[in-house]
Length: 241
Image 1 (cartoon, rainbow, N blue to C red):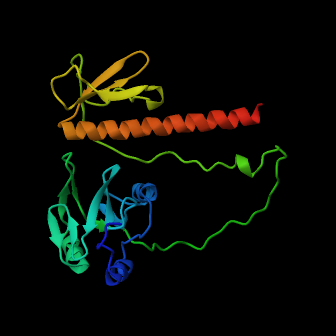
Image 2: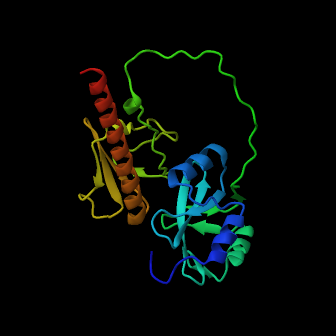
Image 3: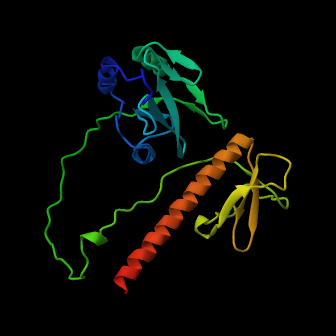
């Protein structure tokens, strides 16, 4: 934590009283929550896992979730180019449904604060059958796993022949992709390529910043895919020595 920037006790109390503050909700859980139960313009505030003086505003825009930092300086809260002297002032700003734009050009209107507490039905099923299969597996075989949820949406220009189709003609399976890298053969900094066994796709974003964001999220996706493959291979080798 940066010296002299410890969150004041009154700010922590104010945040906990805020209906859309989700405290230590993780980035993964925030994306899952907003994508499954939110809508375009839904947002929530949570603690950032990077620094003690940072908070994260997670916002859903169509089918992806963006994350923005809110920094606490000790006397004020910084959000983008704006600085607010109190949490009340920040909340009032959000109440007016501001339009925010990311460095990649994405525009989102903050419309719907997502509540920390959501009413849930107290309905449970009764277990009627409970049979354990004698497989020889132990607690060491219970490996928690879930698909990665990092999201990114937008339009890219594909280099190549003229395409007359107005609708998507194919989806690229990232499990077959071996690399994502900048296209250094181009003079522009906003182009990159996806390397597949039989073909390399050359794509261009609007700006170099957006191309860099695409590369980061795609590389992260590939790393998650490789981890899942390694875990599957390791579990298979344990079951079949």
